[in-house]
Image 1 (tube, helix red, strand yellow):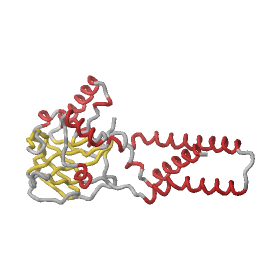
Image 2: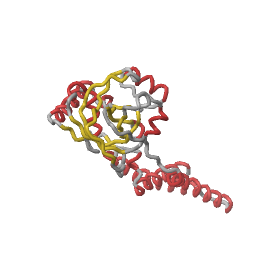
Image 3: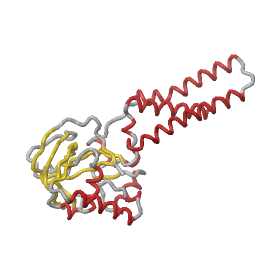
Length: 271
């Protein structure tokens, strides 16, 4: 009975997330077929478990039957209650502040932070190196970087956001001097009111490996509040950030334009 309830509950919750359009806030939609497969399998297995359970029952008292029915309804309602009445929240600058003002890029620092948090959160640069061998990663990033280095102006879209940010941080000297256009939400630099980070939250595979990715911007004359969505154009330079004690690829802003938040504010890594 318990196995049936768990499997049926998972099927209900996955179906609800798909029909409500909230599934993309939990996984990279390039892997949505896996969610569909698991949903179908959980339904089939739930039916199997129900048949097995019913065959094992020979005699039921009236009271026991009513209790079993009430328990089934209660357990099967839990996933839907959670999905409907505990709404998903779009990650924004408040999330960045809550996690603390640090964006460790060095491997050692990042490992320390992850150990403290018990997570694999990423900051500034999407790092997909753990999904490749060292040589395969270097080869893939080199090929991707060369693709964008051919352009004087790099237009960052929802589809290529993650890979562009990754190669900019992998090859900051080579991208210095290139012009970049992209959209993100503002996070004001607590250590310097003249600087603003421009971010988007990205998902590599699922919400467990998500992170906040983007660039530090300088030279913008107009100040924007946190969570303001901006379309910007500027030139990449390498800027030493005192608070973070490291050099960061930074966008020297030519133009800032306030825009509406995209219908889906998240970006995903395309392999």
